[in-house]
Structures are given as C-alpha cells and as structure tokens.
Length: 238
Image (cartoon, rainbow, N blue to C red; front, top):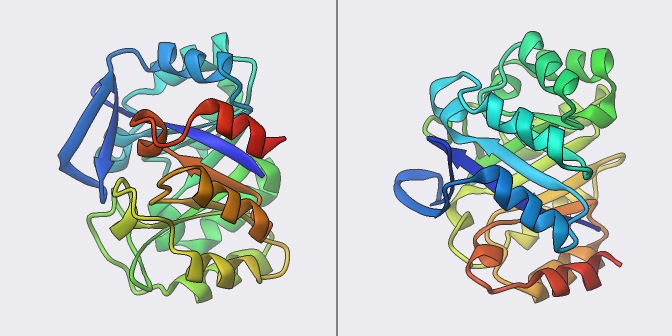
C-alpha cells in the first residue's frame, strides 16, 4: 500500500482543516515546499497535495508553489483542488505532477472525468469522492449533490477511471478512524485502485487498510500531530 503524506495549501501556508471547514484551520508551516522535502527525506514515496484556495475559489491559486515542488522533488505528486477544465489538467501534468485529482467537476459531469482518463491516461487521473453520509459533496465540501457514493464509483470504474479517493468528510481531520465499512464496499468493486482518506488516527489504521488490500492511504493530521511517524509509515509501505 502507498501512503501519501498530505500537504494542504491555503494562502501559501501548509494547513489542515477539520471536516473541511475553513474556520477549523491549523497552520503547520509557512513553506509547503520545505514540508514536501521533509516528507521526501524521511521516506515518503509519494505526496498528496491539495490547493485549498483552488477548491473553494475554483482556480489554481497556489500553482506556482506546486510547480516548485515538482522542480525539487524526485517522488511523484498527486494534486487536487479547483481542477475543473482540461487545460488545468494539462498544465499540472506538463509541470511534472504525476496524477491530477478531479472532484467537483467529476460530480457535476462524470463524463468529464471519463474523458480525462482517456485523454491523459487512467494512471494520471483520479476522482475524489468526498462524501457526507452517502451523498457526494462538491466545491470544497460546501455543497451537496444528488449523487450516491457507490453508484457514482461504479459509473466511473465501468467507463475507464480506475483511481478513486474516498473521503468521509465527517471524519477528516478528526483522528477518529476511517470509514472502514464504506472502504470495504468500495474495495470490492472490480478494477478499483482505492485511496483511503479521512480520519486516519495512527499506524494501526494504516495497517488495517493495508490488510484490506487498498491501493493507497492519505495521512494528514495524524502525521502532523505525531500520532503516526514516518518510521512506521516506511515499515508499512515495505
């Protein structure tokens, strides 16, 4: 299983939110590039980066920071936040991002994500399924949608998208443990590369996800708060 340390960027800072709420923000550093280098030097094999300004405002506000990451890192990045057209995908891939994450735009138009996977290659596109209960949320997790998690996932997988990132918003940043029940349901879908996100509280959660056979897991607050260490992450990845 790949474990992705998370770097969320807001106003040029490295931050974490609780349940996706901007008012519940903790700043962990003023240099996201330096933080990325730290995780790489400590053994991370990939990083999960989110432009929170982009997610809320619909534009790649922190694109230059991410460009700098691509220039100095040797490990792959997956990047999301405000990516809502083909040009934005191409710009990120051209600068060296390995995988681009589509969220709100995919919920509004699964066809967009399906076409992106065909155009740029399925390995380079992921769809983020951010859920409040069984409903997919959009636009920085502020808005709801009419889409249900399992139906949405099945539609994407059937038509060529293979990497899905599932987040239970109620657990994100809460150190309460992932939604293992939903993870099991999603993991049972044919052809899925599932990345688990939201609620990881420590190494035991990561070991449990690894035992389930999921493709990857994202850890944010647990890592920044010392609930899981990079030494433990290295051991689980190996």
